[in-house]
Image (cartoon, rainbow, N blue to C red):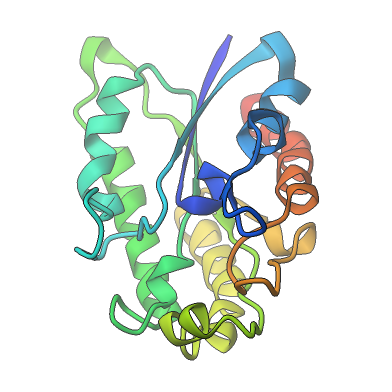
Length: 212
């Protein structure tokens, strides 16, 4: 059985903008991916709201810096065959980074961490799949509009930047924006249909990456 770590933010956690709350377990994209892969793989969901690629954001109690937490999770869930990273949305906040190029550099740092981690018991370095999150969209929610000011345009740059990075360093790539769209309720999150669509869309990509 293959082991897959899904490393992400509230889109992986399954934040529901309609409630607000959390989508039922079966509607979150890692759960959909698990259901479609069945006994061939174990899918581990590690989603935290507000998580960035490699930037500090201290407005919540949990550490949101993805680069700082990743080594602990690599050790916790070893051995791993594949790490799927879907981050970058929170990097679009102006007070965090605000630029797609910063998210791309953060993603590159995460790749370096995965490939340079001191794995125990001679475990192999897992394959890596970069996932560009669906771009932000316009919203009438004043708090989210201010929190992600300028993020709609910048977030549209993530997919081509991540695709180029994946090709450069030899990682897999998937553009979640080709199968899912963010909701205008807050401009950031996904309804149940769209988060399920990501899990469905990832299945053939994951199967190819793992030779399933």
